[in-house]
Length: 199
Image (tube, rainbow, N blue to C red; front, side, top):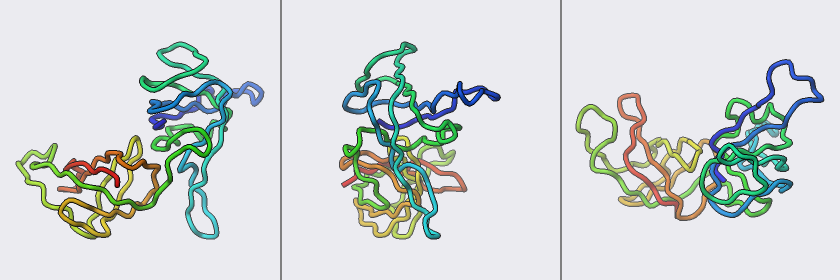
């Protein structure tokens, strides 16, 4: 599941005994989830380890499920769902987990800091007031990449006419064949220039 939202539903001043766990919202893309399932969230939480920034996965248990405004016992792909967990609400508050991926332990795609993608560029830049043509992607160029619900900057390590190898500032969970939206900085704004297919 791509995590689109995460929040804390406890009003200020809630007594510790009455606190409810963090809520995660998004769309299930494959499989099923049911109440009581153990899940993992990756890349997870950003922590510092011996001066280096690393991401550690988060484990949680599902306590409630809601789909279409109704409480349900299990959910399948499609539509928006809200998952109640036993997570500390400070982890989920203010969309803190947006851009992560949730799934059964050991079944999630790998978390990567770089990947190669086949690129498909548009003829014209989207959203620009003037008619700008899209130039080829160049080596060492920074690109904004949207992978599922995650957004990260990738610096192009090597670029060929229809392939680009990118090094990511923030790691992402990605599946081979997944489509990635590619934006380029033009006049101090990120503008959509095409998409990539992860190899």
